[in-house]
Length: 104
Image 1 (cartoon, rainbow, N blue to C red):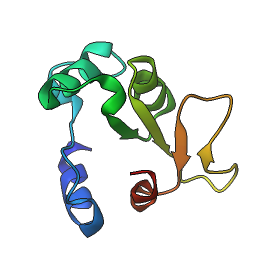
Image 2: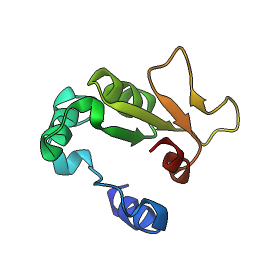
Image 3: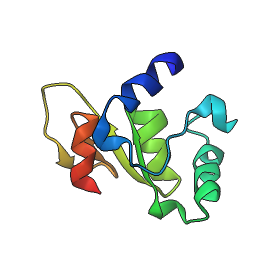
Image 4: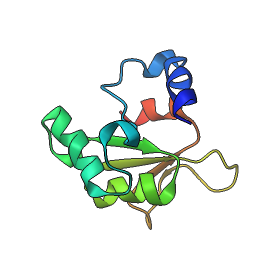
């Protein structure tokens, strides 16, 4: 996964201007450990709620980030269900990385 992530991300011109991207193996803590998300906040010298965390795993990414206090976005490429804020979940859902631009 790690070998494929950066080329895919870098291929999306719209997302190149985002502040940073973090991979758990580079941070030193695995998601959903709150320390992973705290390290990101420390990197930017900001509060967790100022971070928009994007991932494709409900437990490790969406719920983990939301539990740590970050704004959380789940990428779900499944056709069923709706996108946007879902009242029973503390995260938003999008279908692709480019959909994130609408949330910024």
